[in-house]
Image 1 (cartoon, rainbow, N blue to C red):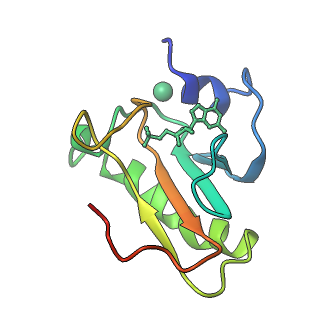
Image 2 (tube, rainbow, N blue to C red):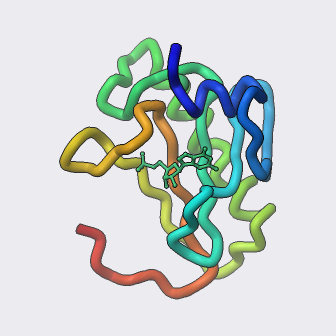
Length: 112
Ligand code: 5GP
Ligand code: ZN
């Protein structure tokens, strides 16, 4: 499958790794939008949160379960924001489920 995040998860494309376990990988975004901008992806391909089912909900749990580990590894002691973009209106550019973890400064109150 021609999916850039599957290739990163497989080690075929390099990344600046923050955290990894058997089910998820976290790495720094190539175009950071905050002082800390991490991405957390499942190693299993799910296109977006909109594709989740009762059978694959564990994939989302794996990603969210890694959030505090990634936040601690990045030194985000004052809070942060977790975002997952979905589809066209959500401006999702990579069709492999991922969470953005943004922090390192006071973020704008506006979210949409
Ligand atoms: P989306 O727009 O789908 O919510 O987020 C995709 C994110 O992936 C973007 O913030 C983009 O900068 C990041 N990204 C795209 N390609 C790569 C890559 O090859 N390496 C890394 N580290 N980040 C990438
Ligand atoms: Zn993928």
